[in-house]
Length: 570
Image (cartoon, rainbow, N blue to C red):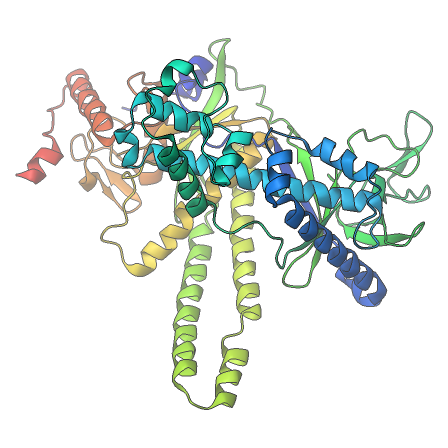
């Protein structure tokens, strides 16, 4: 007899509200498109011009980072949340022309990047300082007034915070007068804030060897060829380009020479919203980012507002039993395959093979590199040492091979998720909520720990949540402790129930595939009101499991099994 029914795949949103979302949909996401390397090889003057613009932009950003890092500037422009526009207008009124030959829009973008870098530096440092002090030993030694003193100084950017960094002692703005008498030593409190911030903040921001530049809407355009396939007439009578997958799209960016634009061929601009030269119909005009990676490739990246691209439709033959219920399915993340749903379907069965190849390759290459590294350190011949570093410890081929294997793993994940949307569409998916102690690698070999560590880092979870959000689907976390050890028929949980991919209950004899059994347990827990949230302790989950087993044994006429945890202790 099976306790699983088709109606369990429909659930009310009220029941799902007690579970937290796995990864909320981002506010923005980035699209990357490569600049055609064949064009750069054929026309080296294009690559030289791009490199020249990147060098000028980098020099401009470093200059603004240096200026905004001085004591006078940081206190003047960062004492409130955002004063970039005032800073930009002040530079424009002063007749600033830039240190290089960049157009005015480029140095303004460099100024914005430097300003945002410093603002993020200060905000992150303040947040970390507040957390370090509140969870430190000295926090409990402070009275309530002193704790309020520290909290007010570290709640955000303010003029008083920068005065503390300049070795001044001051009270927060608006600090109550009746609490000032309870502050025993404000100098020590300010000194504690200053020392903690300097330890946490680390080095001052600097662009370093990063080569990237921002290009706003006034510095680029996309020409439209009326005879080109994909150019269609819009409502205003003009022409708008609808890019084709795999086709090369031309973008013209402003150079350091007045009136001249550089034509760049970019591949695959299907979802890239860009400004049209004439007959434009796209209202969104994002800022482009040109990047040169260490491997010598050039990319154009665009940050877009996140939105649902193509909603996932539920087939008409799947009729909900209640009006307010939605289609819900649970997934058990695996190692040999990406995941298994509650219907018993496995998706991405090549994942285990790819992870094994990846882990074995890293293990073998690390062993070889360690041997050559030790040989290079011990040899006295400088020529041999140089040859080992150049031919045996080179990183270019190793990184390329590792990147290719990672791409194959991600492709397998994406294919599995797309197959899931086709074969088992749902309005919400439930996945395992791993706690700090619910997944242990104790007793596993080094190779297996390495393979599993590649899996548990969340790459599969991140891809699933992102692609689900793009289709308008929600992903929630369901408590997963002991889900692979629990029987779906009688509720008995024991580690001896599972042996690899097979599951056989010691109490009722129920047999199933272990991953399918775990996914069905997650589905039943989503309907059980006793599982109050995604974050539950192991003890609380175990208590619910034992009570469920006792109730089902009375219902099915089975003999209740003893608690395996107690029997192992004795």
